[in-house]
Each structure stands twice: as C-alpha cells, then as structure tokens.
Image (tube, rainbow, N blue to C red; front, side, top):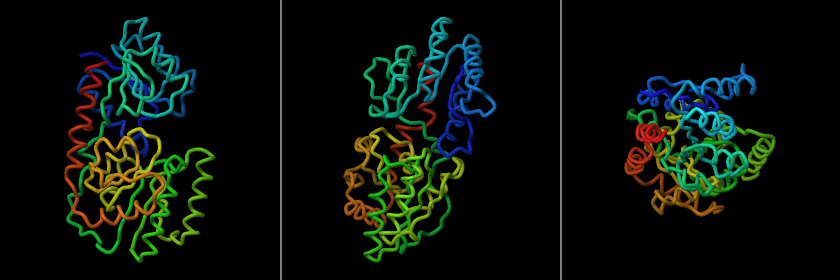
Length: 321
C-alpha cells in the first residue's frame, strides 16, 4: 500500500470547526500503509519550519493531500510534480483568491463537496459530497420525551454577517409575540474584529425585540460534544448566504432533527417545505412551527448516509490520489 502525506490546518478533535478531520485521518489509514500529518496551526511551528518540513516529506510519500490550504498546495505542488508524486487539494468555499487560482494549476486533482463549493472552472474538479461520520452524528438512542410546549432551535457556525442571523432573531421575536415558547441556542464564535462587532449588534437587536432571554450564546463546543447539541433541539436553522454546501446542515440531518435552510446549495436535496427565502422572518417563523408539529423524516438522515458518508468520501479521495 502507498504512503500519504496530509497537509491540513489543524488536527484536534476538540476543535469545533476542524475536529471532524481526525476521523478523516483514521479513515485514510484504511487505504494507505502510512499516513503522515502536517498541521499548519501547530503553535510550536513557524511558517518556515512548516515549509521545510513539507519539502522534506514530499519525496518520502507516494501522494499528497492538502486540506483547505491553497498556499501549501502552491508550495508542495512543484516538488510533488518534480518527484512524480500525485497531489490533490480539498477546497469547499465560495471565495476565489489568487492563491486558489495558482494552486489549481499546480495540483493534479481538486476535490470539493458541491458544485457551488468551488467557483473556478477546471477539468481537475471532482465533486465528492461531504464526509460526515454518521456513526458519530446519529439520532439519540435515549427515549427522553421532548417538551411539546417549547420549540428549541439550534444554529451552528461562525458568528458573522454572512450567516444572516438578523432574520433568525426577528423570527424568534415573531414567535415570542405569538406567545409561543421558544428558545434559540447559538453555537459558534466570532473570528475577526468585524464578527465581534456583528455579535454585539445581534445582542442589541435581541434586546430591542425583547427576546434576549430566549437566546443562549453557547460559544465554541468541541466536535465530540456536537451530536448531543443537535439531538437536544427540535429544528436546525441554516441561513448562510455563502452559496456553498455547509456540512453543519448535514450533521443536523444525520442526527435526525428537522432542518430549514435558505442556502442555495440546500435546494438540490431538501424538500421545498424546508426551504425558505432570504430575509423573510415571517416565513421562517411559520416553517419553524411547522417543523415542531411534524414527525421526524428519516429520509433526511438516509440522504446524508447515501451521499455524504465518511467512508464513501475517503474511498473516493484515496482512489483519485
């Protein structure tokens, strides 16, 4: 079996955003005799040291897999080609930068979760779906009864303007004014100064709408603890305007809870009754109540297992590296 060099941002199962990648690494070990991981965010490593390590490691492996780091695909690409090693890049984001354009020229293959997740035209692109660990993200096995009088809503992701949380708070206020018991849990944190300012704006909006006590700002929650969060809520809301397929909606579906989304990428697999228009709190509020009253649809989980299962993804990546 061949050897694989993985270059990723972080390999830490306690990280909310990137904790999933530890399970990817374990799955890769089924297809390669040796898997070496270089993490870009290791605090003890400088960029120079990371670069030298990558240049040293490339010729000692048969293939290179770069996860969401076009700059390191640029660095490793020429060396991989010089040594006759195949190099692939995983990229799922709507942003197109000069780094991505150059990386596309240097790698042999590009993997992405959906057509909307990679915005460059390239013959190298393979649309794979996401890799959701459906054993980790699964419905609760406990027979705890839900509170029929309380609608529990969950949102997961970076606190940023692109997530359109204003519409969610306005929908929450509409339900509150209708005397519907409702609570929203916001999992995630700001990342940059603009995001911190946005969170304060949201908190002020919640206070103005009279629903500040109906919201829990949960901050970061580790990857291992996320299934419990999904399972404890009635409906997951996804209002991101990025257009690319966000894996958190698939995690929620795999955990067996209802979801509603305004994201364009969701339209290809969600039934129409779970799709909402952008910036329409009234329709969102109506959909949330409908989800609470409807029985859970096992087809949502079945879709994730069939099209975004971790095992199928890593098998496909390994085949093309």
